[in-house]
Image 1 (cartoon, rainbow, N blue to C red):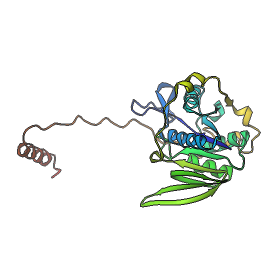
Image 2: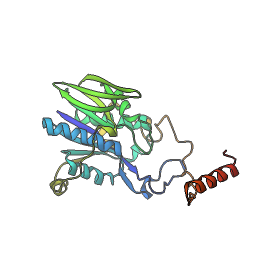
Image 3: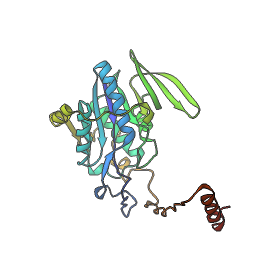
Image 4: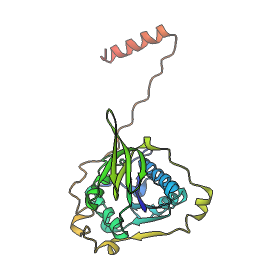
Length: 266
């Protein structure tokens, strides 16, 4: 049994967001982190590994520096990693990205009891589309917004979060699950994991390695093959400095009311 965990290296949005002229993010000039929801997906996979002894494979599409992030995930407990990297893949939207990742998983092999884990969504796009689209391309069942996971033979029993509660679903493998932050608390890298992370396999798949896969065609991947594009990207204006009111309760209430009245809020 294998568990593929799809992870993404995203810009650290706590800093300044840089944008290229074509509307895409200038990732080279920004600090990066592992997408937070993807860490919950990795932790869920590692918990299943602890329980069943399965193999955990971290999968990411991105530029060569994403190897550092994948090594960190190996240090957390992943057995190996796959980096999908090539100029032909650059600028892909969610539809093209899902095609490429699905092709990579299919290239390595998706067996009867395997599971694909994804985070709920990435903080740089917030679309929550890539996971479900990967499942569609692989033609496997999917469950989104997963808040609990239990293996039951060849099936997986999950608790799916709804707006007003939860529902329990039994799904056959192979399947894809997208994980929410409420599912768990991601573990830290272990000392032994850090010492061994560069001795475990990391495979790089470029366009030439995947070009024979049915999903990979130059006119359906990359910026050219993406059916959606960014109309405009910008850094939102910084909020103004707040005003602190001091004094006892009556004085501050009167001062607040006067300020709100002056601004025609009340």
